[in-house]
Length: 214
Image 1 (cartoon, one colour):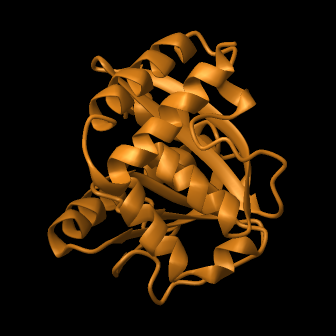
Image 2 (cartoon, one colour):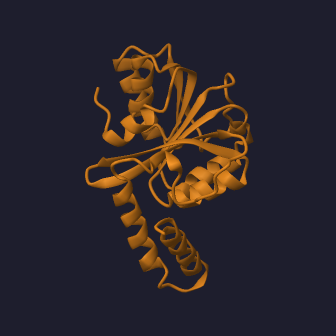
Image 3 (tube, rainbow, N blue to C red):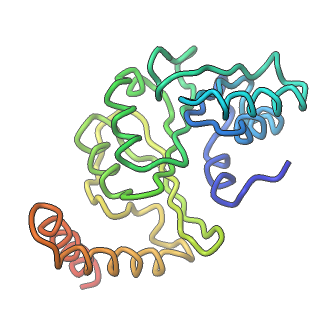
């Protein structure tokens, strides 16, 4: 089973966890890979829709992993708690706003849990939320998959010594970093032409980018 480049970037951030909780598991490809590769002993595959869970169950059964990967129909992490301290939670393939709402309802994720997140949109909003709500970013990775840049963010509970919402020092030496900055600049230049709060925020982010280049 071969993972996409973007999911591989997330998988590489999971290191020897006991139980991995994958939110929005789709076909359970990521939990299956993590258990088979030894990066996780067990996994819980969660999804809000029954269809993807049924597909996940078939894949789990196909690899003979029913005893190590279980499925759960739920909205985000509702009704889920970490089985053991130090477990990992995967939040990939959804927008930053969805990830934020899930974390707001799961305060236990600040208690030693490793979060691996890959927001499909507005990663800067996710970073701002993490900084303001008791999380610290411990790693980031960029990857290019089918012509689109993705950022994977690893975080856990604790105070942060960084508050830059656009990027962290972890990706400043990444080969895709310049392309990432160019993508942000283009996005914010367009958004800054708008009115209201979003336009003002885009202007603020543009100023941060210019300050970084001085």
